Image (cartoon, rainbow, N blue to C red; front, side, top):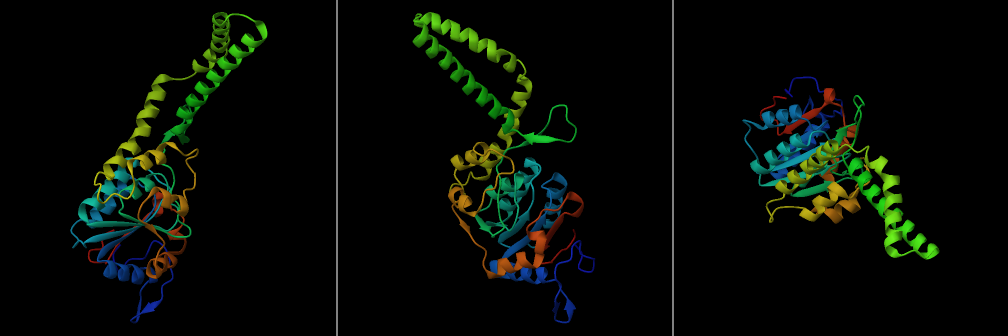
Length: 300
């Protein structure tokens, strides 16, 4: 954003040295100097256009040794998330992510690439399950885990039904085990065949491939064993072990998953406070915020 343009949002703007300098600019610049880091503020969807904006803004700057990203997002495109995380890893020695508010889905994928996580009182991550379009529904999505979980539940129910049919007949009828097994198989098959017949194998295959995207990107982001902040097993947990796309992964659970996690210091919390809701609540694509400090080459 050019220095003389009107901001897209209105944080408190105290006077400094006779100029109307927004407090978030003061705080971001101070953090940049103390950490020898490019400070990036990102609030909005993780999309290809926003990834390109961030990379374009970084291009041509005098890079600092480290990078400090304050990220607020409901998620978005896993491909864009990977591009952002890899760019920050490749161009800086240390990548610190400040989760000052909601940082979901593709935001969590970016977090896998960070060497350190800072979590505020409002900070939360989310699972890495991919959102897929609902069949025959316009503009509606559902977690990629829904179909896979449904199949798992059906398998469990089918086995439990067979077991119950078999044991009940064996105990009560006095028939041979072979006869009981045959009858139990026929009953179970008759009960579940119509249900399994509604499953589209192509859609199930597409779901499996889609779910593998975040997992594969996650493993690529933690290839450096010396710098990675999370184990491969815990990446798998983030993909498979949560029942809902909106599931809250808070500070306590983040500390179980990641190695280097801490609360914000006074300066970092001051930056979040000066941004107000923009540090906590994600905006839509029309109001996306991407700014880099210090303002050496402001072109967003």
